[in-house]
Length: 111
Image 1 (spheres, rainbow, N blue to C red):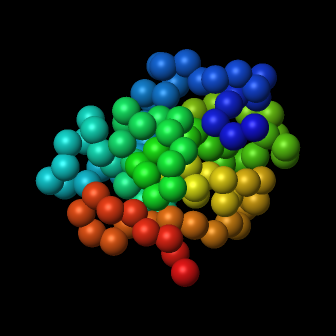
Image 2: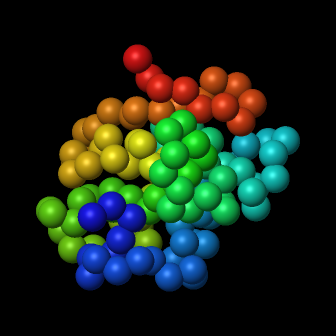
């Protein structure tokens, strides 16, 4: 399942906070609230686990999927807007982004 550790449990708050720190800081925006994921999609810290379309909801992704390697090390975790995580699925090492941003705090689908 997405957004869970290798034991299929929710990540604890300390891991959530550490993974948040890996997201891209955007000058002019409060980095404690807003950042961008690997695809350039906006994510909002308080929306971890939120899965509304084009929202700033985000999940913790295993860069190398759990199906390939059971590894919860911080180096294997990244924050992804939830639709990017869903689209990535178990693809590795190459995968395509689903959502990016188009300006100020607005996400859009990649066509």
